[in-house]
Amino acid sequence: MSVSVVIPCFRSARTLPMLVTRLMPVLRAVSVLHEVILVVDGSPDGTWSAAADLAARIDGVRAIRLSRNYGQHNALLAGIREAKFDVVVTMDDDLQHPPEQIPLLLAALDGDGLDLVYGVPYAEEHGFLRSLASRSVKAGMAGALGIRAARKISAFRAFRTRLRDGFDELSGPHASLDVALSWATTQVDAVHVHMNEREHGRSNYSLRLLVRHAVNMLLGYSTVPLRMASYLGFLVGLIGLFLSGLVLWRFIAGDTTVAGFTTVATMVALFSSAQLISIGVLGEYIGRIHGSGMGRPTYVVRERAGSSVAPEMSHRSGSAGVS
Image 1 (tube, rainbow, N blue to C red):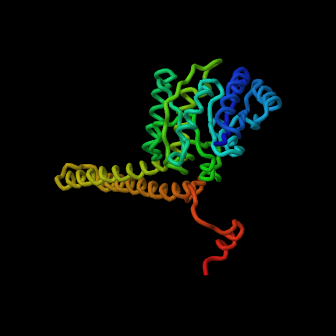
Image 2: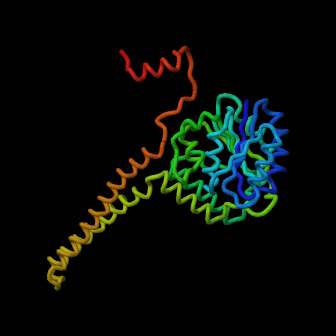
Image 3: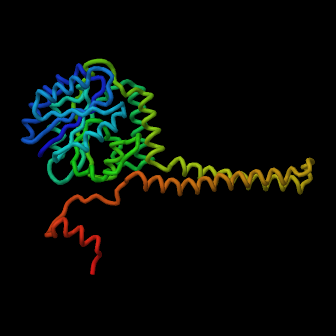
């Protein structure tokens, strides 16, 4: 299979030369056609100079420089849309993902059974809090976003390039590659790989950024918060009905001495419920509009069999209708 390796780069001037030096022999061994795409995500250090130098010296290496720091997933999308070959491999720039482990991903992907393979470590390479936050985010992705393979997700992945057709229109500042890939396929698996400690510096993906990414995914790709407002409205409505009955009972029993209290209390409880329910219903409609505007595909063609007309004739037939 032909392979495109996409690497988002940020503050990695010291690790890129070693990474590419180790990566190229691996790619030559597993694929005749291959390329490495270095996407420099607005890094303030000498990362662009290092990437541009590698692209000038080594055949098959390309470098892309973004105008500012857009974030890891946005940089990945930029590289994936530049990929030329059948399979895309994504990996980090800090040598935590050993290039020598790429054949394991490609071997798992080989054949017709899978479209996406994640490389997961044998043991967590982060501290307790970071690992706990990461597992919580994955659990949230599985529950709120309906991604069944969420617990297998990692930044070390290999997938068939055709999956990008499923998120061709994805745009906006809060992109999530794993959510977008889940739109295009359910044929997902994971393999265990060895991962290394970071060679230099510390991870740019801090606990704060991980939480921020989780919030962006929840608000950007899910209507769960809107549904929660609806559920809250119904819950408040039930409580309001109960309180209304209680207030009326006390009024009939003569326990209420303040004039108008029964009417005011009943109206506040019922109208508060009506407002929350209305906001929830309105939110559902806004959420559906939001969902249709995310660029989520109607379908993605996995393969075709049998004869077909030429593409231009097919286009004309589709526009003219069936007679």
